[in-house]
Image 1 (cartoon, rainbow, N blue to C red):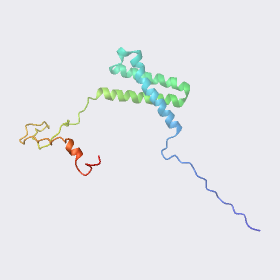
Image 2: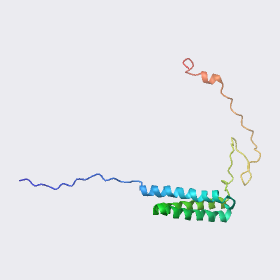
Image 3: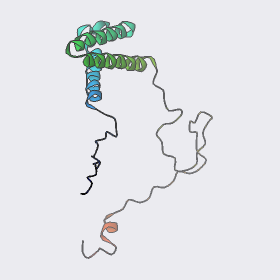
Length: 151
């Protein structure tokens, strides 16, 4: 009589390499709704007072109100709406309070030759002559060469 051996069958196990589940995506969706709502409600309901500290307070109050409305749907909806509203309010505060910071002394320009500049990077007169632009390619350049007869 032969022995029956217990064989262990390895089954393929599903893996989630990015760690994104449906709960995270739902919370992110509720966060987007909360952020848009927290910025839009004061702008629609009280547009004359939606500036400065009062505007920020109205954004936070809207985020809290959206949390209570979201809690009626589910706790996850309320938490996502609150977090989204607070993040949107924080972004608004940062954008309003920080001046636009230029990228140092950079500006669009094209220097084909070495130039002379002052300590803050402003271009002064160049001691070198301006370079001559190459001649524009005419029809001969396109029709010549090894493909002349076929094309």
